[in-house]
Every structure is written in C-alpha cells, then in structure tokens.
Image 1 (cartoon, rainbow, N blue to C red):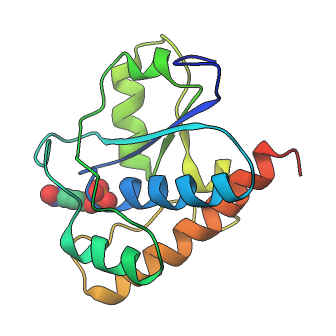
Image 2 (image 1 turned 90 degrees about the horizontal axis):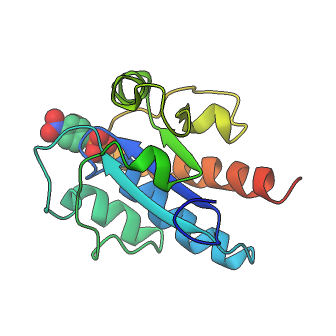
Length: 157
Ligand code: 4NP
C-alpha cells in the first residue's frame, strides 16, 4: 500500500473532467456503501483542464443519478502516481499508452479499468466529451457497472 494504510486507486482519463472524475465519484459512494475503505483519486493525461471543475454535462448526468461531482478539480498525471497508488487504472488504450510512457519501468504497472474490473465489454470506456447528453448518461451506467466489478474484485468475490 502506497499513500496510506488504505488500498489506493487512481482513475485516469484524458481531460480529468468527464470519465475518471465520474468513476471516482461512483466508486467513492459505492465502495463506502460496501464497507470498503479506500483512497480514491483521479487525474488526466492531458493538462488542458487542470484546476477546472468537471464538465457541466458530466456534473448534470452524475447528479441525476445521485453522484456529486461539484467538488472535483482536474489535475494531470505525474510520475509519482506510480509510486503513490496501488492501482493506476486507465479509461482507454491511449491513456494507458501515455501512462506506460511516463512510468519508465518504475512503480505499479497501469491497467485498463473495465477489464481490470471484470467487465467483459467494452474494453475501453467511451469518451462522451464530443457527443450529446445520451453519452453522458451511458457513461454513468458504465461507471456503475465498472465500480460494481471493482467492488467484487476487492471483496474477493
Ligand atoms: P475525459 O474527456 O478524458 O473523459 O475527461 C475529455 C475531456 C476533454 C477533452 C477530451 C476528452 N478535450 O479534448 O479537451
């Protein structure tokens, strides 16, 4: 365990304003309900949105499902993340390749979130950023599915 006594998970997407903050918020709520004590965080491989809140469309879709993204502020991935977290979980293959390039053989090996969580398909978490509201609602459902798999994995089920 890296940052603390608690198992720690870092969720990573491109901008850290849609997918990874959503997964972090869903995981925060559902793992607490499941009685798991974890350190959870998210970041992006890109730097465009650093310091900003989550995308308003993502905030709205998440709020409708009962998840609060209001406190989120975007940050960029850093090399220390591979030492600080037990798992570094990328939303898609591009994010994963960027992380692998940053890691340079040190610390934990990043993995793709959905397969890691035992979700059979899709392998990559679709990016809702350039689409309509329905993509954001689909993202919430997929985040819930992934987090349920994460809970099963960490509970040894
Ligand atoms: P995310 O979505 O990686 O799920 O946060 C995106 C956010 C911003 C951009 C792309 C994807 N962008 O190009 O600014």
